[in-house]
Amino acid sequence: MSKADSCKKALSSRLLSRLDPWRDAAAWRVAFSGGLDSTVLLHLLTELSRRQRLPPLIAVHIHHGLQAVAASWPGHCRQVCQILGVPLQVIDVQVRAGASLEQAARDARYAAFNEVLQTGEVLLTAQHRDDQAETLLFRLLRGAGVRGLAAMPSQRELGKGRLFRPLLDEPRALLERYAQEEGLSWIEDPSNSDSRFSRNYLRNQVLPMLNVRWPQSVLSMTRSAAHLAEAQGLLEELALQDLSLADTPCPWPWLGLPSLELAPLEALSAARQRNALRHWLSAFTRLPDSDHWAGWDSLRDAGLDGRPIWRLTDGQLHRAEGRIWWLSGIWLKAVAGTQYWSTASQPLQLPGNGMLQILGDIPRGGLHVHYRQGGEVLEVPDRGRRDLKRLLNEKGVPVFLRGRLPLLYRGEQLLAVANLPGLDADPRGDWRLHWQPPTNDHSLR
Image (tube, rainbow, N blue to C red):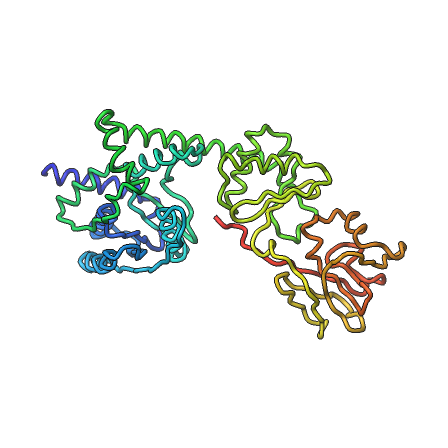
């Protein structure tokens, strides 16, 4: 066996071993840019599929259209896939303008992958050891914490399936040698030589100099990333322990809003508070950088009469009634207006505010629904007429909720406040006002 054949066999064997946990996947979708790395990965997989029973292979090419030369890339990918006998899906995406074109293109790419990946499928991407070192160095220069310096994970959830990087431990030089020995053709993106882009500068200028002085620098950096990934795993275990103490029953479980009890968090050190919140918030929003954590300090330390809000990229953290609440999407939009209930036996859809229905005997008279404006008075059994603001204070209703609670009126008379025991029904108990709040997708990340 020649040296080249031996190298190819060893690379194929390592790839197959890493892919073993995913052999029962519904399909393997391969992120295929047409560049060197993804071309090698696709070629290796098709070679293995001829000798092994593997899930169906599907190549996915994301077309950004950022350069004129890129117009020919889908055609190149189709030609390669036709030769290899692999079906190809080409997806056109729009890249939003922003401060970082690299990040915007990446966001668009992974959003497309997220949409296309089906239940039980695995997306295979071709990042390698040099990419991992580059990512670590890039994030180090940006002042990233342990989570960021752990660089790229070998696998993670993505949409309905999983993302896996089977070549993450392989050096780029080995992939290039494989491509040359197999006579593969690939796309050379001209933008990769433009060192105005930060990652290109690191790849083209910095890493080569480091390799001259320290030939094992890439290997050493990827080893450091692995150590940091292990440390991040321990931090996540600690976060789960701390969050379990704060994840207490909510007085209003029907709200369906993520919330935590504040007191158990306040009992932790500042570092453990931030660690627990990073873990909890990562499901909802992009995490703040170090300079913006002062927002948490302000929210935590506000007086009892304060109404602090910590505004983050994808929503807001509110403090109310001894808890912190995550609000996003529709919950950040005000509701107003009057809804007339023409058929009170049927549920009433409230624009931007869920659904309302009357359970039991329908009260007589023309009914309508609107929202708190101030000065409302409600007749309470055995207590007489009471100011609604005081009643809401007694119930401990969070401030952010008060303006959304549906109020049922007959003419000028306030009959009930939805979902609040003692205020949501008629005195005789013949009917009750039930509100189903709006739903929101809280798993944004």
